[in-house]
Length: 94
Image (cartoon, rainbow, N blue to C red):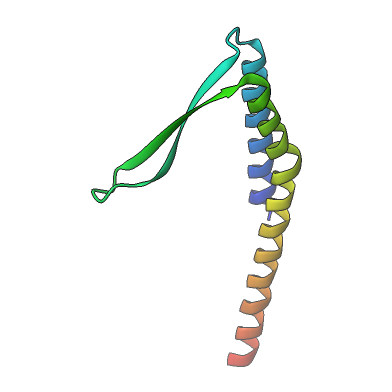
């Protein structure tokens, strides 16, 4: 669980760094390339999209302030469910 908290903090910090560097950019549009799948030879298929700077900043804010906490909660519930399943399995085996 502590690892998940650490990863969440690093992710939030990365969003903050990206947002700050984007605010310093002079360009009003940012081109982003991201993977969308795999080709049959297992190489990544990429897609490129242009975002307005304020549009991309709002996406970073949504990820940092909303989605990150939701994903952390889902992961916490999953970890607890797995632990309880392991404990129950150990009790039944004994």
